Image (cartoon, rainbow, N blue to C red; front, top):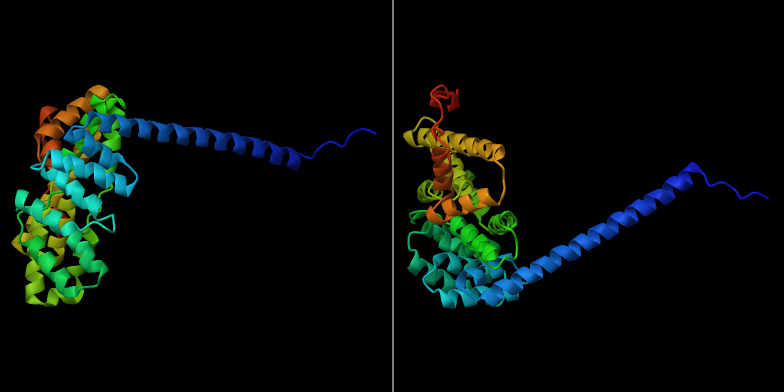
Length: 316
């Protein structure tokens, strides 16, 4: 008797199982390779032992307790580095046994104009639903000069340390550093939630929100600046000078970021480009300054063309 020929459906099912099995094996191998590279990178950074390397190991790590120990070592080695202390404060807030208040006080002493010092306190007040603490913390942020998350410094120091220990090629180190910096916990939503609705009917709260918009507008990243400009358009009348200034600032920021994105897309994103970008990050305080320098260096006009007049952005 001749064997029964399998149906097309059975063949398809078997083929699918083989393909899925092969894909799962490749994914598992890839994951192991990623984990091995991460472990090798951390080991190399810890072995280097300098503040930048310890900071990079902490920023790129996974285990909260281990990351906190590493950043503590970096802070001990470089006690006058606000970017390291900022990350110590960030990582402390993720470990239940760590008290962030002494760290916040230390960072405030090092960088008294930075409202981001109170970010952890703002999250804590919101979690505990402590309205008085929330208002006091927002007022402290609003009375600051600016809101800095040490974006440029974090990326430059982290990528630079990884490159120096030869754990990754520059472009991979750059991407890893940006990913880590972007994973910071910043309570933007706590601020925007406070500055709406009934809150704005109270004169003191409205004044806090208006100052808060100004402080965030002086942030060291475009994201922070945009949150500040969003708040400004919420807390000022549409035809006021402050509202118009926020629209103009948004117009310029959007034009510059789009122009820089197009410029970056046209370039070859290789290790040479990354080294140049890291030099800009290391020598400028804010993301906005880096974009302006990049556009200027490329011979491009950093200001929007005249035909994109402010009037086109105003509400009808």
